[in-house]
Length: 349
Image (cartoon, rainbow, N blue to C red):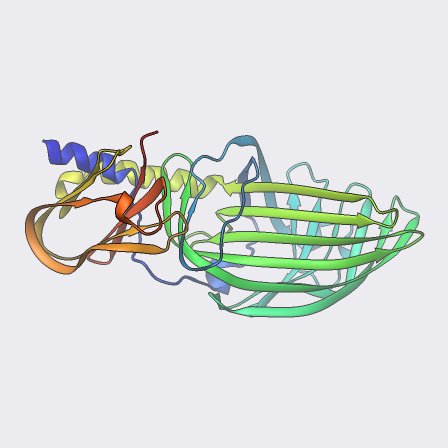
């Protein structure tokens, strides 16, 4: 019974796919007409570091409010004539903001957008992504266009953009949801808009994707605007995907109900820890097993078990103070027969 109890707790931190580098494709990740993408706006958090095999711990995100984006054929818009090359429109649930895209088997490009008081039309579009797209893939380019604000103020816009698959790893979200094999895309735009006055702007977006969900599971946005009078305006925002959270919670519930059929039971205790962390696991049959310790960025600090095939119960002790990089928070990663399990441990304060 004690192993079943330990496993029940462990499942709250279960990842659902083998560890690999994800890729986006047109079939699985392009905008799709008829979709409604629901998100929760949350308090801003730092996007963390780039690189391979990262862990991003966003499990403490605080919700602010819900929002939704609808995806439709661009022909439904009264302003569609402004964007003749677009075939898809994505607009907010209040219909005040609309973005016009051209999506093909090879890429998604943005031809402009509208707000309550403005129309921005690109003569040279921004490439938002291309297919397939994966880690360390990158594209850079320039864009330009014009804007009409309050129906009378005309402006010119020119700038540069870059998109890059800058990281992949494990993403921890609220409600104990853990997403393995997440790809992070970093998108950067820098531009100048000139009219009677001018301003410079920079927008950096971090978007996390998984292979089984079409839309980003998390988005973090950072904006900076410098006006001609010297004033600077900075804004930061973040959103997570309601759909993927609901799906994963349902999957976890199903897995918990079937825990007695699993081939592995494991536990990490005490948690919070003081000086010693006990790492225990029980294999019902021979398995490929690796256990290691990661820091909060996902970098490996120590191997506990390496590629052993064994059956039975095992226990190891880990002394965090003996590490060269002593921290208060670590992750214990179990790799068992191509599945990855993560347990977060914190020091007792």
